[in-house]
Image (cartoon, rainbow, N blue to C red; front, side, top):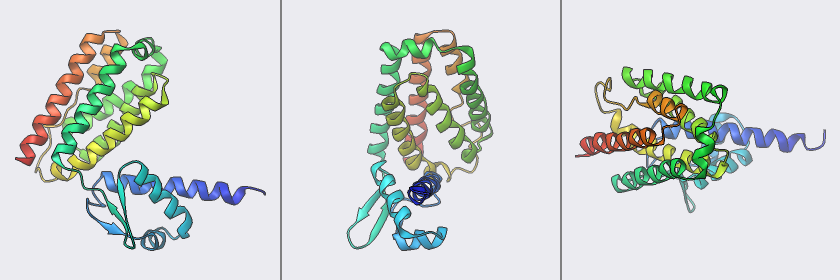
Length: 223
C-alpha cells in the first residue's frame, strides 16, 4: 500500500522517542550518558532511520545534545536551570489564570474535568506514598490534561516541555532519599477543585505553594 512504509517508520519513530523519553525522565538514561544511533537501534531491534529521527525529536525537546562524531548525550541540567524552569512554569500557569485562556479553563464542563480529577487523585496518592515512578507518569498526564482544557496547544506543549525537564533534573536527587513518603507535593486535587469552582485566586495560591515547595525540597537536597 502506498505510504505504508512511511507510516510504519513514523510510528516507530514516535514509539522509540516515547520510550527513550521515559528512560531519561526516570534517570535510567542518566545525565551525561553518551550513546550512538547504532547502539539504540540494536537495543530496540530496528533500523537506524527511525532511531535517528527519534533522537532528533528528543534534541528538539531539550533532553539530548548532539556530539559531533560521538553520537548523543543526555543533557545535564544545573540547579540554576531548575530555578529557571520553576519560574518559567509558574509564569505559564499564572498567565493561564490571569488571561483569556483562564476563562476556557474555568468554564470546562464537569465531564471534561472528570479525567483531570482522576489523574489528580492518582498523582496525589502516589506522592503521599512516596512512589516516584508512579507519580511522574500521573503528574505529567495531569498537567497535560489540565493545560489541554485551555485549548491552546502551544501553551500545553511548552508547559509539558518545561515540566519534563524539571523531572529530569530532580529525579536523580529524589532517588537518593531513603523515603519520599510525605515529602512530595500532593496538591493536585485541590487545584482541580479550585478550577471546578472557578476560584482563580485559590488556584494561584496553590500554584505558588507548589513552586515554593519544589524549590525548598530541591534546594535542601542540593545543599
